[in-house]
View 1 (tube, rainbow, N blue to C red):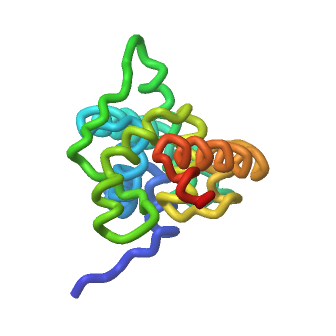
View 2 (cartoon, rainbow, N blue to C red):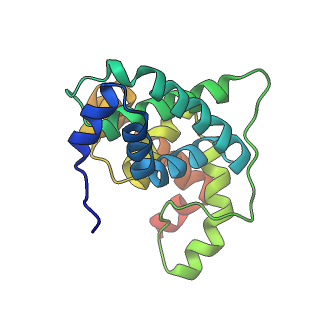
Length: 182
């Protein structure tokens, strides 16, 4: 018989130093963190490096976690910060594989999304990291503006502003602005 352990119970145990509880928490959120990291840094190798650093940082600091925020929000923030650190790294530039499709939904049919996949991935990589993070969290992960603001440690209005600018840049880069005017 498999018993599902509540996230709150796992968080309490992890904060108390239980490494297995922390591992279970990370496994619960790993798919979403991988998607965020991949979209931020643009390559699987960099994603793995970023997540290794983020998870190590989270493990070292889980004892300081305050239940004021959701664990997923706290972990998102750590992953986003690790992505920003990687992007600021000495001479590192994101490598975009045009063969890999991002998980961000593009407008139109499935065939349209396949055609735009590489272009969308490249357009995301052209955004400033703070704008890219807002798009990934709200449009890609489905977080509310308030949740994204908590992850990014900014005001809700800042998220809205970054999203507006990022979406305009994506429309421009993907040639969707012209199509909308027609």
